[in-house]
Image (cartoon, rainbow, N blue to C red; front, side, top):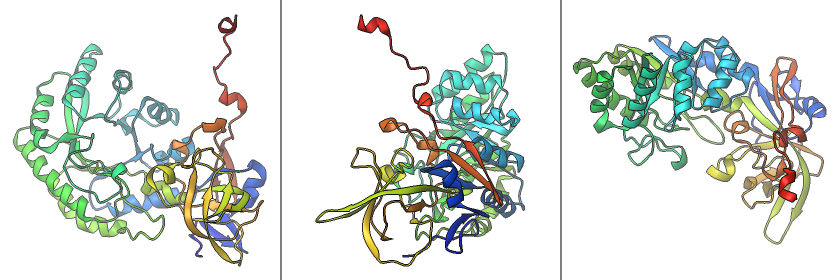
Length: 424
């Protein structure tokens, strides 16, 4: 069995460390399960991204749906990143860290009236719109507030990103974006409306994309559209490519960022405008792990089971995407390997982290690390089975900080009360 090792999560004297802190030291204080993040990973990943595109005018808007930990958001904000928010709650988090509203844009296929109002009231950079009805509503709300709302139209270029169907967003059958054949008419409408101003166009074709070809095809389609919009007399300030660049969870071989830049920068230059990116997973996925304790081991006639204290409440991706997360011991040991299902304590057959996985034989009381847990883990967590959501730890060199403590039972009962009249 192999060990997933990097310069951020590595073994020293056979103990797994996050930067210069032993993971075991962290869990002795906060228990398990727990999310553990490397600050250095996030800084290095962001720097790699912006350096790859330094040849062109560009900006990065971190997609906080990937991981909305306040400290992580502030790390990226301090590095110069803007933020891509998808809800009232994400906007609240973005403003909470003190980022300037002109570094925020509001996305989402189903924004509520209140979310649009908040975006306009806070003078955010722009609102991404995905339908004619939404565009008209934005204009109405802006008129009521005596403001002009900058809008960006998200177009669906009908390109197959070759990824999991649940995270594909650029095909014609998906709910996202304005169909490419209707784009010009939507821009003409936006230009006529008195209280909106079209400032950009963009796309987002999916997540965990590991080949350049779908991006190149979609960008070339968008360039053709961009030039048509320009020839119609509508001036646009930017083109947004979206996010979705794939990372390594198992044996994927995604393109490097520099390979990507080399292929697409020549096309970007033809737009003659600012290029926007909204990465999420790329900046965060391999910057975090979940530490978990082995509770029990058991077997039946067909299967070995390793039952851990992490569950689908902490990491639901394997259950809903059949996603792969590497799992390894906190202490590197030599022992026989077995094929086992690594499962949680939640009372659902779908509560698994891995199925039929080769893993070094475990004993009750040992600890494991679930790798690549910096994205779409904590943000998708729940209180199912009355579980308290796990703490989040940020490691900075040889120190670690509890950025969110384990929920208390009082958290679970927040604003819930027994109504005595119901029992009279």
